[in-house]
Amino acid sequence: MRQPEAAVGLIVQRSEVLFIKRKARPDDPWSGDIAFPGGFLKEMESPAQAVIREIKEEVSLYFTEYDILAEMPLHYPISKQLPVHPFIIKSYSFDDALPGDEVDEIKIADIGDLVKDYDEKKGNIFRFGDWIIWGLTYRILNTYITRYYGNFDF
Image (tube, rainbow, N blue to C red; front, side, top):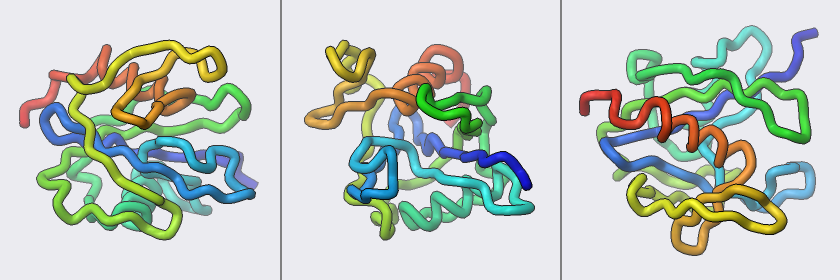
């Protein structure tokens, strides 16, 4: 049996990035957190196929592998040995984004509006209005901003 893996999508349009607020669920360790759309790979599914499927399920946006600009290095949640494949995906419009069953809310953030901060319980964070981006999502976003942001021609 294959080790569990996950894939997430940083859906970007120029300086904007799409975030979701996960619905509160007792079986979800990241319940209620701010995240990128994504989820676990199914058997015989590539990380790219998984992220495209999960984005469709969670935010009703349709992409193909041709829309993937880059696959970032693997990231791992601190609490679990779960490889997470982050993908940078070019969006042409956020207008059709709608929350799926596992999503409470969708927000589009401009990179310039994210405020780096520190929280006693969560560590390094980004603030976006009343949303706190922390943990794995913080680390993936920070990697995107420091290594990839500005490298794509929109």
